[in-house]
Length: 290
Image (cartoon, rainbow, N blue to C red; front, side, top):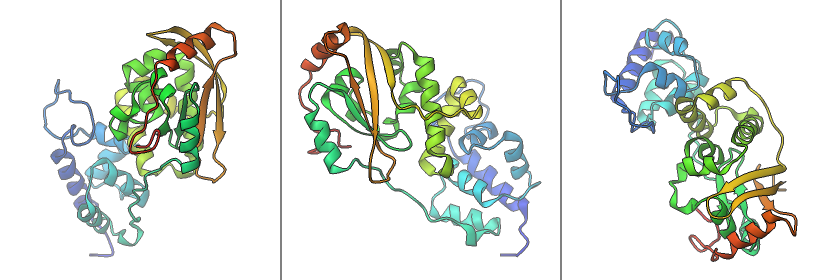
């Protein structure tokens, strides 16, 4: 490859990849209204890669050279395999800057999974640092939904808050809870905004929800991991539950979220009724194991 890259060559390659990638393959909802081409629009690629439409347009037109950071985001947005990724970096004369692919699946530590199994009357979930739902117990399923029935990519607290109608409807203070979750994700991931999983979550939510797009762009932060969660459950009615979150001591960023109610309150009675209907759940031999 020449030491002086031709931005037009990379631009042509990006355009070809964009036009060949269907919305379904990119993980976007099917909506053919007003769509003149089978592939992705420039706006969709830009949002999936968390860059501006103007900048992406200049990239395709060969008017600007792509940085390694932008290339990494575009590789993920355009679902490039290893060969296509290598070719894109070579076209940009940045082969030496190509990052190693990371595909690390977070899992709750065995002691945490055992603890989940012992919390018979207390809804509890394990959150990863990107708010992925890594583990849960039976009471959490009774309160929220059956996480095991969801595709792995949808087992994310923020994804469910914005895109799962039943999960969203549970929250009586949805806007407050959703804003807090957005701020928590940005704060936790500030040191690694190029994380592949994070980029996919932010890109998809930005495309599919106007509130998320505005709140994420506003860069509001939240370190709040405790407080009162107000739910409206379709079976037992209103619940006011104290939410406490405990950080894992191993430095992974995982947190255990517990939901409890003060004894003698209507919420405590309703929670007891709700969790009494729940049989112990074990997925893959471990509670909440995915």
